[in-house]
Image 1 (cartoon, rainbow, N blue to C red):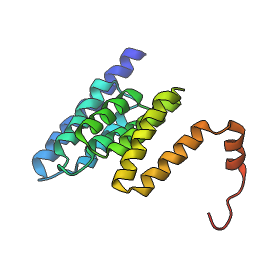
Image 2: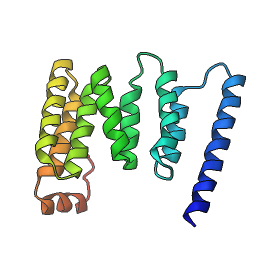
Image 3: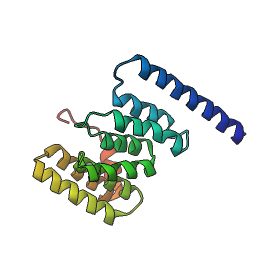
Length: 168
């Protein structure tokens, strides 16, 4: 059963890549987001080596000002692909692409793994970047993340059960 599934996956992957190559030959520009979206379809169903070409093509096609490494890290974080998320978020920090957001997400990943010490380290770095760049939104997201992972669990669940008022 597993062998049949893997062969089916390889066939789908190969057909998708063939279609991509035809599209790239026919169209002048395909936005890098397209490759990220394709990777998101494959990320939980296929081995990393099958997903990586889509991600690297996104990096290759992204304009220099686009924070593609952080975008990939965000996508991988939201999809639960921890290994890919770590890799691309670390690369984002090295490349100085939205490094505040990358530190925020690395903190979330660490907190999910019950490593609050590492999470706090990343959140402190994100806060420093937010202050330096005067990024209030990032600062608020860091505060919210810290609250979610450090507040007593009964408080968070009680707050989430309460209806939100009209001013929310």
